[in-house]
Image (cartoon, rainbow, N blue to C red; front, side, top):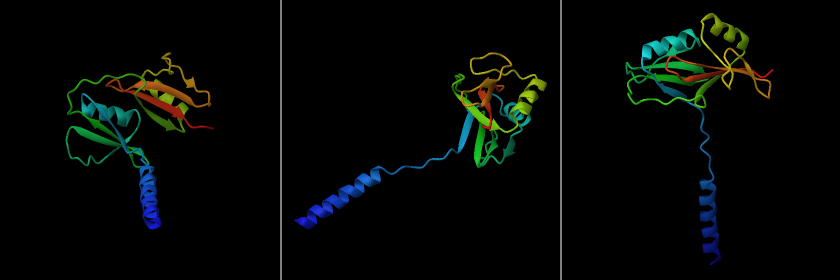
Length: 149
């Protein structure tokens, strides 16, 4: 009887331990539904200077870009559903060259704002990080942050 109780406890404990396993997810990619994949690809190449990578699907209405560290941005133009966009849903990037990037946006006449929406204003968070927000040609919000000094 003691063996049966011991085996039952061991099986139950193993099941409980297994149920507590974590999946240890890591970020892989973000996909955006865009109107014109080529115009959007040009925007991400010119403004953010992202490097285009091989679109492993081979689908011509898709373009892929590297976000560094094996992270990717996928632009997809073959879906026809309308997209609802608000500022809370955004792509956030960090750069060591924050001030130079803000100057680049100004030179390119691309409007940016702080979080509340004040034009041409840099927001400084409570932790000292500078940030701005701007939109791509499809209206998607992009947040750019400075690094913590």
